[in-house]
Each structure stands twice: as structure tokens, then as C-alpha cells.
Length: 316
Image (cartoon, rainbow, N blue to C red; front, side, top):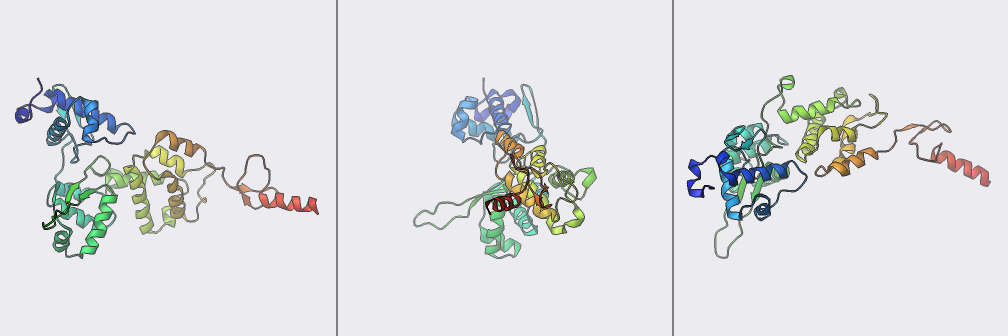
């Protein structure tokens, strides 16, 4: 029989059918392209009522099987009948110290939130006072943390006649943001930064010697943003590498990277993005008529200028 919420402390999730059903549903959602449903949307997937979903999600989180949002299975977490194992959840400060942020100020703000726990209530003026920063600066970098999926901040509705309350916050230590270990080959980089570095090394036109250090950092952060949108490495390489690319394709590698990454905006959709990658235009070549560079088009053997010049000659 399924353990009630008051008795669940003596029942491990592996022995609770409701926990196993909920965890299986969350794993199925995580491995598909479906968006995360609401609590009510999880009811038909796991056969539990909304209140039961909340209760058992809390126990899965306490067992180090779910992220702090109570919806994301942690990497390496498994749950079977009679056996469960989790990767171990770091403390909020440990997670914040290893999270990939945009800059040092974002990292300081995230660390300040982490010192108050995974979730809670704290105002922007309090964070600003703690870090000796202006309120405007903290608001700006808090917006960066929210946009990057590291923090969730929800304002408390203002009731008539009551003093405004601080915003609710939650640290988003999910699969796409947590950094478990550094790779041996790039010990100075975090795991996710090392993944971005390795992807850049696959591009024949990417030459680190022709890129400023600040651009190298920005390039890795741009790729990290695509990783958080569930883009796999092979799909990114398919968009960033074109037929005919060589070592001298890009005079400004960073500019070419940002231009081609525009085709990878938004969450990854396997079918749509695979078709877009396969429909890439032909590489540049030399026009046989004028010797200038042009991009071959179906049905034409010369560039447009040559065709226009011939048409004017025939008309005259």
C-alpha cells in the first residue's frame, strides 16, 4: 500500500509506488521535447492527484533524486523497486561557486542568494547592502541570472494596506546548469566550459590566435546558452560548419560564430533544426565569367552581374 505523507519518512522512495510513478513520468518528460507540465498536467501521467504530486516530489527532492525545482531529475539519479541512488546534491553555496555566470558581479549576486538557501524570500536592497552594490546594479544582474536559468524570482502581490514583502526566489540547480567536475584536459575550466571549448576545436575555421580573450570567453558563453536550450554538440557543429569551410574561411572567427549561431536560437527541435542544417546554402566559389566570388545557384552557371551584362549586350 502506498505510504501516506505522514508515514513517508520510514518508506524510501524505492519502496513507494507513487514516488516511482512520478519519477518515471519526470524522466520521460526530460528525455522528450515536451515542455514541463504543471502539477495538474502531471496527474494523468503518473496517476496521482495534484496534492500527492507535490508531496512525493518533495520526498524525491529530499532523496537527492530531483532538482530544487522538484521537476528535473538530477543527472545519474535512478529509482527502481527496492533500490535508488542519487548523485548527491551540493550545498547552495557549492553549487553557486561552480555555476557558469556571465561575469563576476553575477557570480557574487548568485552567491549571495545561495547563502540564504535554495529558496526563500529576500529583497534586492538586502542583497545590495550585503554586497556593497547599488540596487540598480543588483536588479540588472538578477535579470541576467533569471534569463540564464540560474535563478527564479517571483514578486509577492501587494495587498491593500500592507507593507510590500520581499520577492520569492529559487536557485535553479538543474541538469543544464550544474557543473559537477572539471575535465582533466582543461582543469582551469568548468565542465560546461570545457564542453564549449571542445566544440570550438571541431571548427576548422576557428583560430584562437585570431580572437581576443574577451571574445573567446563570449564565444564559450554563447555556446553554453545553446547547451541550456538542449542543443546537442553534433547539431551545433552541423550549423556552424559548412561544406567547403577551411582554415581561412573566416577573417574574424568570432563574428562568423555569432552570425551562424543565429540559426540555433531557441530550444532544440530535432526535426526542424536538422532540416534547416541540411538546407544550408552552397559555399562561395569563383564566377567563371568575371573571376569574382559568388554563391552558385541552381540553374545558373555565372553570377548575376555577368548575366545582367550579357542581357544588356543582347538588348543593345
